[in-house]
Length: 286
Image (cartoon, rainbow, N blue to C red; front, side):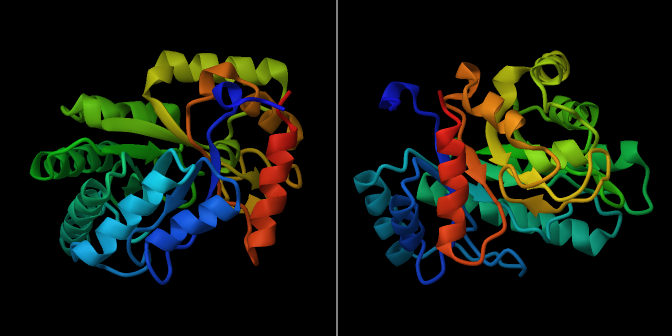
């Protein structure tokens, strides 16, 4: 069995229903060393700061646990690239609130879907996203990094190519607070192949050339229900989708990624689904 020095950071997106600290308990139950949570309802516009009665138990519970890193995922409603002024303004306000909650909870990473251009141009959308992120980082000082998540390319979403992610990142002045979250399902659906030793090596070389591996701060490990280049975001259980086990075997044994938090967002009905998928990933480690 691998010891702590060679065990990759691995965990799941877990519920914080009933109290943020309960997410830590679920992570412990699953044997996680990292978890991802929503700090607020991800389907509602919410800008409230957390009460001290929520903050203290969460921080204390994490200190007592085996959870090294907690990641927050920003609301799905946020669209910083929206050409609609009301949506763009609401999105900026929500992002600032998300950052504030992360700072209060000592959460180092906030994963963000970059946005959708709708009827605007790609260039205009990318500039709007970068400007809003920079404004948010300036107005909420601290250490929390925003991680741009690679997208599947559904509809008019931005961020389904490494070039788009790099373009957003380059326009942001606060370089020390911007990173990348790599989602296996999204990248595969967007057309990237990393399913064999050869294509895996080629993909990460490309990533390093365009973005830089040092900017990779988190991973979402999900198989894909749909084929490569489908541009459809449908997660599947590890090894049960179109990606297959080999890609995950390569990731789990890649020494470069040992200290990169790896989070599953696989289909969930009961906690046993998370148990099963985490076990599959752990068994791939050699």
